[in-house]
Image 1 (tube, rainbow, N blue to C red):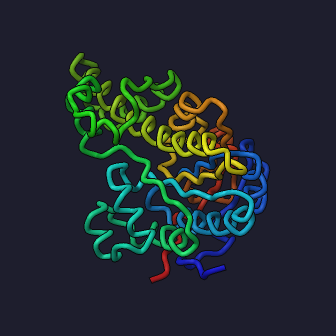
Image 2: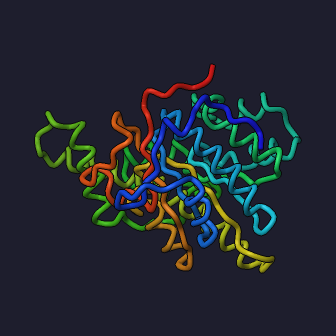
Amino acid sequence: MASLSYSQTEENYRIFDSVGNQQTLDKIIERMQSVDVVFLGEQHDDAVAHYLQEKILQLTFEKYGSQRQVVLSMEMFERDVQMVLDEYLSGLITEEKFLSDSRPWVNYKSDYRPLVEFAKTNKIPVIASNAPRRYVNMVSRQGKDALMKLSEQAKRWIAPLPYSPPSEDYAKKFLSLIGEFHQSDSESKSVSIKNSKMLDAQTLWDATMAFSIAEVLKQSEISKQGKPPLIIQLNGSFHSESGLGIPEHLVKYFPKAKYLVVTFRPEENFNDFDEKKHKNLGDFVVLTNPKAFRKK
């Protein structure tokens, strides 16, 4: 197994099940055997989570790669750069050109490059699963009906229209979060409309990532070649924790999908599972040390 990119040890995280019983990384890998999709929900600046994501990808490929196709799906790339990503993975273009044309996140080199390079070396497909930011921004400004004005070619880069609304639980959770950032706003109609558009924009992300995953599962089903793929989906934890967000949309696009949710959560007291904060955030909840650092 290749060396990992971060200076981390098991002293920097604790793994629990949904109700707080201590678990192990091996248990996560074992549970992956019976699912189609594993959601790894992160905080984007969590160094320990990035270390564990790379380790999970490596262990998954080591254990299951000879039995079924392992696929890496990433929020960090948008659907309209899939061709660029594929060209890089197949060795047709240089990394410099890949990075200049694929709009990578600012922390790509430190946090996501190791996974992409592992995928490249081991011929693991990588899915650019997210909606282009320009269309998400369009919804947040003009509402989701504005997407109907896009060309047919542009609509290929997002979930089929009209995409499903969020569940009631997800909407409550999102609007509660937004409220934290609008405490000084009055409960005016204009604020409600603004928040509704933001929720629709958030849902476009969720629906598009779910659709991207479902496309892979459907294509495998059509081809009928061996076991279905095992998809590891990387995304911000809000998009998948408690089975809300992307997982809810996934089962609409592919009702037979079986999935596992792993939620990473940085906590100062990462040794202790707080039921009020952590219960049912995922099938597995990984509490990480926020003071852990990246290897320079």
